[in-house]
Amino acid sequence: MVMYSYDQVLTDVRQVYQQLTGFEPPKLDPKNPRFPLPAGVDPVSVVQNEINYLNLFLINSGISLRLSKTPTWVPPAEVYQTGKEYVIDLDLAGVGEEDLQIQNVDHAIIVRGARRFRKRGEDSRYLSTERVYGSFERFFPLPQQAQPENLKKTLSNGVLEITIPVASAGSDRGGEQ
Image (tube, rainbow, N blue to C red):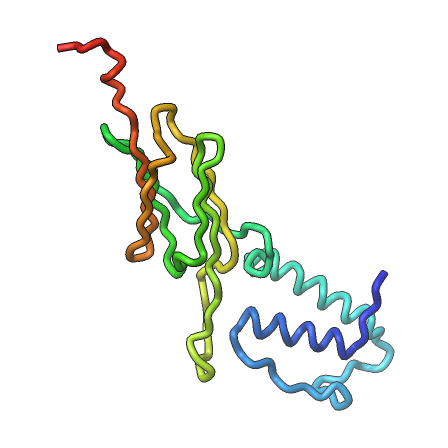
């Protein structure tokens, strides 16, 4: 088991605090605590209880997902088909084209990307955020007649539209009238 020094724990806590809130962490003097422990209290058990409480808070609030490196959110999508094309629309507010990757793999479209946290300025103080940051991945199987090698994509007003031409089904019917 790896043991951390007190200074390393404080450094890690300050970094996580700043990532979560966007604020500079408060200055603390560990030699002169504002709320000293009462006599006879085991400081290790107090710290462990606080860690357990923080873990439960992070899990229950969804914040732990925001810090994860695995896909953490799923952008909402609409998928529809017209007579000539198969269309996938994804809501990607705050995601730039440079943060997107679209692949055609085994007659399916895979969309990967990330929404990155960008602090609006040094004097910005975030009071709350409901956006989810981090990576995402979506998988869309295609109908048999889709032609994914000819797909077109546009990102406009926070919506990614992927348009895939569909081969005409009427060409197999032998010239019905």
